[in-house]
Length: 195
Image (cartoon, rainbow, N blue to C red; front, side, top):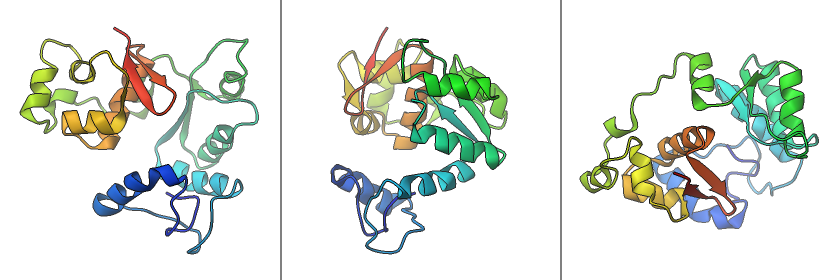
């Protein structure tokens, strides 16, 4: 879902990703061709994203965050809203705390989300169509993706290539591992194994 016209890639560094999505998925926009990226477009886009989802999980949000706009849209659309608490001293936790105070479900692990949504059950990461070398790389680990990651920072595209899995599957597994405290999200869209 785009916050621009379908012919505009924003930000520009996502051009390769947009091309891959167009080849094997779907790029969707409600904006006319040629519409540039503008701040007011993204809340409109996010209401559509929340409408297509079963739930909305907010991990960090300031009180004036676009994430809170998306969470409000999700609640108005009858979707589940989840929030991860943080330090009472962090400005990036205040939005999550406000959501929890207003009825969002507190999340401490991926299981909190999965048990609430019910329809989505963990099917086992290793049961996917991973290439043999990816399965071997994760051998001996209780989390195959951790074995594939190693201990150096790595981006999602590299993990997809190593595991032979689509980005949405790898991203979902990274979120679960992050909520479980097994990996950390780093600046620049990279992840690092913690244990």
